[in-house]
Amino acid sequence: MYDVRVRWAACLLAAVLCAGCKRSSTPTEPSPGPPPASCSTPLSVGFRVVQLGGLNVGVWYPTTDKEAAIQYTATAPGMVARNGAVNRCASFPLVIFSHGFGGCGIQSLFLTEEIARRGYIVAAPDHADAQCSVTGSGVPRPLELDQSFLTPETWTDQTQAGRRGDVDRTITGMQSSADFGAALTPGRVGAVGHSLGGYTVLGVAGGWSSWQDGRITAALALSPYVAPFVVQNRVGSIRVPVMYQGAQLDIGITPTLGPAFRASNSPKYYAELMLGNHFIWTNLECSGKTGTDCVRSDATARYIVDYGGAFLDRYLKGDAGPLQSLNGAGLASYQAVP
Image (cartoon, rainbow, N blue to C red):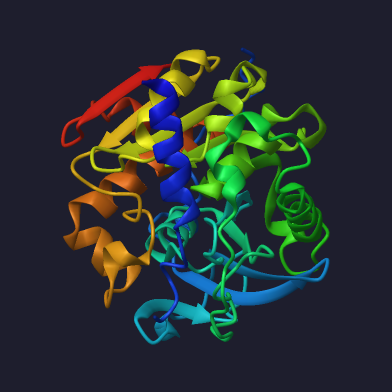
């Protein structure tokens, strides 16, 4: 049965295209404490596109400038200060977002915008398989379906290794950036990824030893393609706090998350959303709405942000309050092993 579920997961993942395009050791924790009054959340959010190591990277960040309407794509509006000044009221943890197979850095705007609004600097590179772009340009091209998704037992640290390099270049580029480097909280880097992006962030969190990036201090995996790590007994090599998110109708991926959760080291969390499918973590959940409006009006988007944001607060800011206040209400399932 498990093999069947893995193959379901692989089949579904291989069909994922850009949803945003048109068409146990716990790390040493930072000292918790209230932010300065000028940093009270929600913060205004800026957005700009930067080049880091040859990658197009979308960056959302707290800003002192006024937000205005923006069209990332024809169907994906937002409210941000385009190229606004970086807020210097405090330092902010860095969060890397890795998109799904055939997606791009702007595929999950309600999440990337709202995480920044809660006091993070979020950097999302376009990987080589991107079918859209953080620049808002680009024409979708034929995407060859990778049959290896059907055989996760054949995956190695060489599979999709270019994504590991992208994460490395993005972190290094952000930390050395003249605009953002001084605004980052030292030693606090979170990795968030959807689908194949979930595979990516779990890989750099230790799923593949050769991928492990010691700068990563927490991993948030959204319907991740975790099958290679499960079938090859690599999940136990991930030794940073992890939260998995799945959904009841995400029949291709979510059934693999139970084995992944059980094999994970603590701290570990599992949040399963009601009904939703594989695409609830993308712009398809919020089509035509800004991220703020979507999170306000759409319960699924709100739970994704609330649980994911609370997890990041706990392990990147040392603020346990938000996560302790969540008890699984509104979810199909919730498990926490702090």
